[in-house]
Length: 214
Image (tube, rainbow, N blue to C red; front, side, top):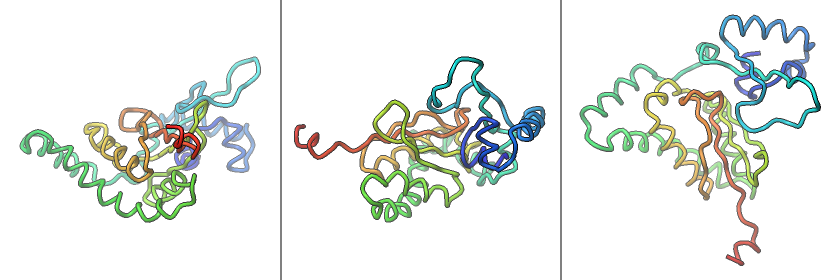
């Protein structure tokens, strides 16, 4: 259940039961146990984007993985990276951490560029999500609610603990996404900031008629 919530995103007990082929009642018992251990947290809406419209009555509880729940999953070089960045911040002069972050992201960007460039028109965000998923980010893409475009969601961040202290890593990654997708993107939420999902809004490309008009 933790892996499903991590990789596929927050869900209600009914939605999680459908994913795993179990009964909602059985799922709720397990979720209650995970919540008691502090590995999941329940809210009344998804932490990224509004959910489907519901009728009257109490909203369904939506479960998401907490920091404790993410702990058993791989986290890359947390302690060493944090120490290196602290040293740079203290001794490297203005912009040293930003320069380091951009250098790190450059390697990722170079590996993903061929994959994204080969994607069919309109499928660039999905191709980027697949590349991120292969690198352990548990990423997905989906239509953005109430907006023209997509949401690129990363349900796991291998460097979340470091990014919490050094958001420059997230900023450099966002800049790389913009270059890879060929349009400005907007980071809406990050795990490093305490959100349950890293969410990036990717606006749709203008239609040819719109580009001509402008």
